[in-house]
Amino acid sequence: MKLELRRTVSAAPARVWRALTAPGELAAWFWPERLSPAAAADLRVGGRYRISGDGLAVTGEYRVVDEPSRLEFTWQWEGDSEVTVVAIELCPVAGGTGTEIVIVHTGHSDETTTGNHAQGWADCLGRLPAWLETTP
Image: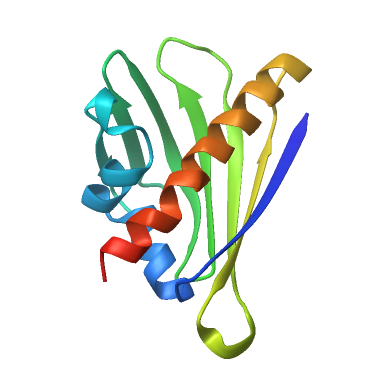
């Protein structure tokens, strides 16, 4: 199954890239602060990442690292056997002051899992604009 989300933010692609790939920044906005999130990333093809917080963690391997426009990685919740794939494209919007973020997450085994991830991604992307506005 496949889910696709699109959001436009008021930051240049290079800034959004940093928010998605720098561990300290990713940990600051990806999950709610109440989960005490942490992140680690070896940002290269074949490198691994881990995002964790109070009893949950997701890990994976980078498959495409094309700064600042395309990132693709596997996605696996710790303790779960299902491995899915996330592709993120960062497209500049007119004037260069914004970025359209396109997330395509594929490989879920059923509609419920796809729906849960759609909600999760929407929540994450909902936190991103405020983070981008408060950190240059």
